Length: 120
Image (cartoon, rainbow, N blue to C red):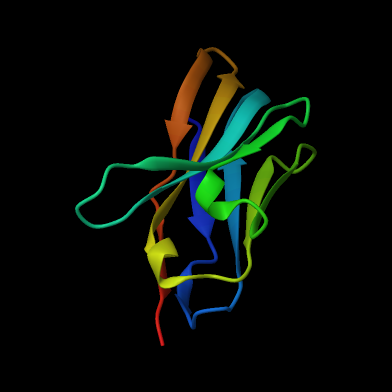
């Protein structure tokens, strides 16, 4: 069974940094796109950043220049480096990945989410 587990969230002051990690485990043959989404209270879940297996990256306009997405294909890991954090970045951050799993095929998976709170 494939699982995605996020880590690295927490409380940080405005202007600070956090690094989120996403670990994929299970009978994984390959991982296609990996992405980070976030959902603030009372708002819809939104895409923050996405990276394809070929390395193509896109960011939400609100995080361009501040956040950096990366992945380590050998370790089945994804990362989101968040710098210059703002209070409006406060949300639950979710890892998402399209994974080709053995005996399952290609499917879309979500992590359980990690809370990021930016506050003084």
